[in-house]
Length: 285
Image (cartoon, rainbow, N blue to C red; front, side, top):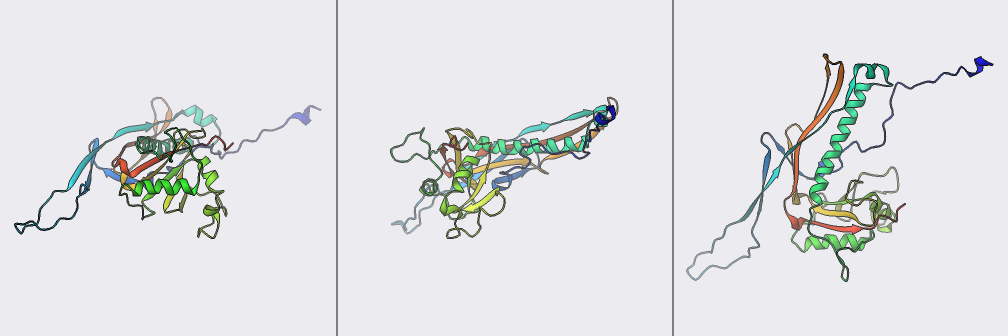
């Protein structure tokens, strides 16, 4: 009968988020500075220049020296995202159209923050290559690789003793291998059991803070680029007040908009504070 086919389609008023990265993974883990005005920020890098202690001279005076100072300029750029919807589209579409725009534009900008920082990390010049290997050699996620990369930084006088300042940025494929290491998940080695509960965005292990991102160069390929760096090796500058997210309505043309804006820049401050390696991530599905 005709009445048996008069079905009703029900649309939920609440919308479901599509799968995409909504938060910045790296923002809180780098050397960041707030810029009140101007398009450039200057970081002052100071060391002794490799000086050694001296004894008093034959004239009875102590020889003097000057510190080694390098000023590194980070240039800020402006970045924006602005979705719009007409009044009719908001009226006729499912869910809260204005809220959709505000949440998606915030996600776009958070991803841009990570992309900006990862772009700077991609300029790392120090590559880990095992004895007998070459620049194209790839390595599995092993404790030997990790300790070798830490040792490479330590040989360049980088402070590797503070795990809150040493950061290992790796890919999801690297994490998948990492979680299978007994030294990573066994209670004999770690206080927090990584296989209990949800997958963690941040893990402290092997003397470093571990972050994972699918935005690294070569992700999912046979040449993923994973990076170990000291917090003071990278500079990130952002406008005071951080990301701006606003929403508004244009009466003349009857459309609503959401806009996110940020002024930022990222740059390597000390090359010897970074080391990268190539990882074969193609074996993980």
